[in-house]
Image (cartoon, rainbow, N blue to C red; front, side, top):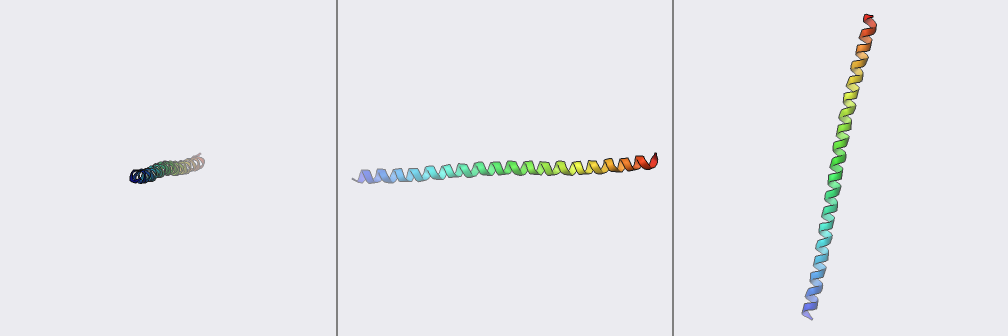
Length: 69
């Protein structure tokens, strides 16, 4: 009788620990995916800033060429 109770308690604790570990891995995977998305977003913002600067330089060069020509 005591062995059955101990076995049931052990299975219950094992189930709880498996759920905890599984939840930890899910949260970790979500954190990694979020970090990748943040890095991608940062890269896109940087590329947009570079594009804006290049467009300004091209516009200034065109204006300079227009007034010199």
